[in-house]
Length: 196
Image (cartoon, rainbow, N blue to C red; front, side):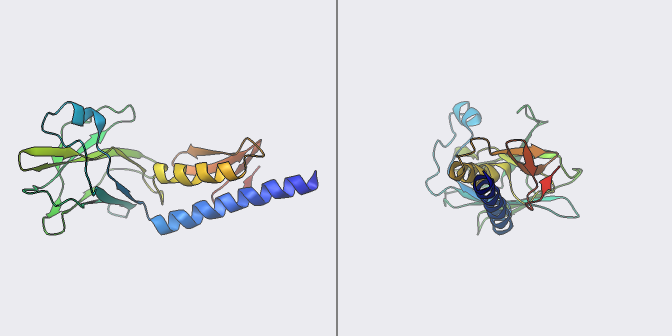
C-alpha cells in the first residue's frame, strides 16, 4: 500500500512540475487556425479557414491585461482589427471596438484592457477585414493574473491525468483564477503543496 501511495504522490508531483514548467515557458501564448463558428456562420463574407492561422499572447501587467495577436496569413488588404468581448455566459458585451495598435508590416494588433481585477475572466475574439472579406478568431479565454490560459492548462493537465489513470481521480480545478490538482480526497497547489 505504501508503494502505491508513493507512486501516486510522485505522479501528482510530476504533473504539478510539468504544469509549472509549461506555464512559465508558455507565457500565455498560443497558435490557432480556428475561427469562431457563430460569427463565421452568420457572415457570408467570413473566412472559414485560416491556412497559417494566428499567434496570440496575453499577460497581466500593472497597467492592465496586454493582448497581442499576429496574423500569419498575408491576406491582401488587411485592415486594423476590432475586438469583441464576451461575458461568462458567452454573450457579447457592448459592440466591437478597434484595437489600440496595428502594425500592418508584421500583421500584429495589440490592445491593453484596463479595469479588471486579479481572478476576473476575460473572453474575447478578434475580427479582421481584408479584400471584401472578414475573419473572426476563435474565442480566447484568460483569467487575469494567471500565467497561462485555461485551454493550455487543460491540455497539460489532461495529458498528465492520462499518465496517472491508475488512480482514476486526478483532475483540474480552477478556483478564483487559481489552478489546483485534485487526486481522490487530496488537493494540491500548482507548487506541489498539499492543501489540508
